[in-house]
Amino acid sequence: MTGNDVRIRTDDIMGEIQKRGRTRYRPHADAALALADGRVFRGKGFGARAAVGGEVVFTTTMVGYQEVCTDPSFRGQIVCMTYPLIGNYGIHPQQSESRRPWIAGLIVREHCALPSHVDSAGTLDNYLRDNEIPGISEIDTRALTLHIREAGDARGVLVHDAADISDSELVARARAALIPGEHDVVGEVIALEPETIGSETGPHVVIVDCGVKRNIIRSLAKRGARVTVVPFGTSLAEIEHLHPDGVIVSPGPGDPANLDAGLAIVSGVIARGVPYFGICLGHQLLARAIGAETRKLSFGHRGGNHSVRDVKTGRVSITAQNHGFEVDAKTLPNGGGWHVRLVNLNDGSVEGLGHDTLPVMSVQFHPESSPGPQDNDSLFDDFLNLLESVDRDGR
Image (cartoon, rainbow, N blue to C red; front, side):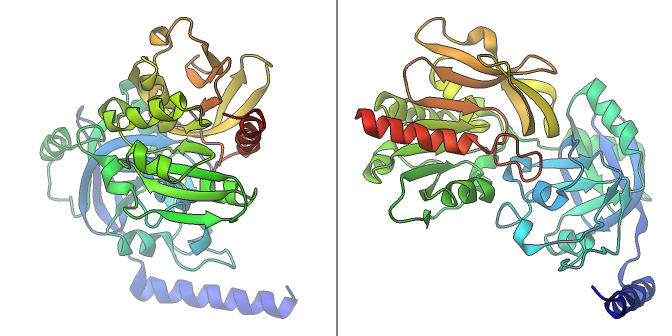
């Protein structure tokens, strides 16, 4: 960029600041976030002037707010970003992980009204407004995060135009809010029509979409795979008719204990010897299919700094995570070849399962990242190698 280009860009930015100061961006200091346990935070609203209810959670990811907004696993949740400045690089069409944002609401410490990235195609404020999602800024997100860590993920409401609404009324609304697990959030996020992407000659991977992120599809396609995405609820017979070389059950929102319809898929794929890769929700459904149970975490794992250890090799990697439930290790079957392959170093929770002989792998975290570290991108190579080894041995 030349000196003239810099001056032109600076002039553009200053002109936009003045314009928005006059007309566009006028944050209103009458928004409120209320939790069902009685805690109320008041601040400035941005995004859509609306009122929403949901589960209030936090994520420790430092960048990638657009990927967070468009991650289907956040459906039904009001998300607190622990990093203090959000919105500074704007919105980029290529960085969405789904066809639309799925969060119920967004909580930030400081909202940047004017992004400075040269490739920005819009502001976070307008993006949320266009998608009817409210945001709140100028609250103590650190205090909120510490409160959630003590109390656990909470029912809550985010309300604009709340200056004349009492704390008690806001808390009453929060107590009546629905949270994921109390309604069908998977059914809300899946695409209803199948799609096929990638090479016509590569190994054929069928992804069961429970809330799939686009980078899972991209990660396979760029490795030469042909990827067919089918909605959750597709029957085992329909999947078999596609003649997959391997099956992935994707991440997704909600309580895995409510998704009995997915268990027949997982059990059938495993019984037929087709390589299986369960990611996040797909990992939890694998555990349920082999007789284990899942349970809710106190405040979930959400962010890009979760350390996971491979039990066999001792290798530790940093992972991207977004889930509120875990596999109960005590309920895993004894014998039968199943074993815990990966564990979380923070709380010892199960991060992956394996089998002594079956072509099965699962992870609780997100190897596709987006956002987050890419330490585990090679797991897609491992899965495709698993497909090749099964083909060589015959099945």
